[in-house]
Amino acid sequence: MGRGKIVIQRIDDSTSRQVTFSKRRKGLIKKAKELAILCDAEVGLIIFSSTGKLYDFASSSMKSVIDRYNKSKIEQQQLLNPASEVKFWQREAAVLRQELHALQENHRQIMGEQLNGLSVNELNNLENQLEISLRGVRMKKEQMLTHEIQELSQKRNLIHQENVELSRKVQRIHQENVELYKKAYTASTNGFIHRELVVADDESHTQIRLQLSQPEHSDYETPPRGSE
Image (cartoon, rainbow, N blue to C red):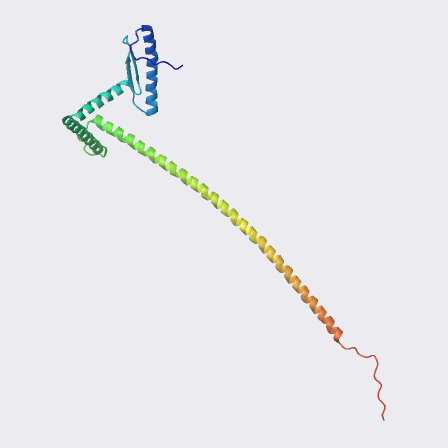
């Protein structure tokens, strides 16, 4: 059987009311934490028990949440009133102009301009600010140079490996050429010797044939014919 529907009304029994308050309070705070983590929301929760005891939860700080709430509430009320909205934006513009003027003045002082009205402490603070900025610039420059050196070192190693591989290929090609030259030279020498042998053999056969073709001489003289 499923659970029966709970009637939302005040619990008369104080013990049951306290137990229900404790359970619901813990569940509500748990849900508030999950909402802040899962949705990256700024959550503020304030609970007062029937006895006046305070329970609260804030994802950042309760003061920050309340200040933000009050500011947002005032802004919403001002936006609902056109005249208040104009005044609101006028104040915002004035604040921005003041910030811009302060930034421009600080920039001129950093560049060494308009230092006449500054006291010794202000000049010391400006000097410290410049030293901090200079250290930051030097650190960034050192990091960039170190990174470039590492990249160049890696490129140098790659080029060295490529040169080693190319040198090995050249050596292999040279060795192959030497082997081919030896084979070609051996084949050429063997062919030359074979031709000499063939020519010599032909000459010997020719001499033999010439000798055989010579006429044979008689060992006796032909008798002279008698006179008639």
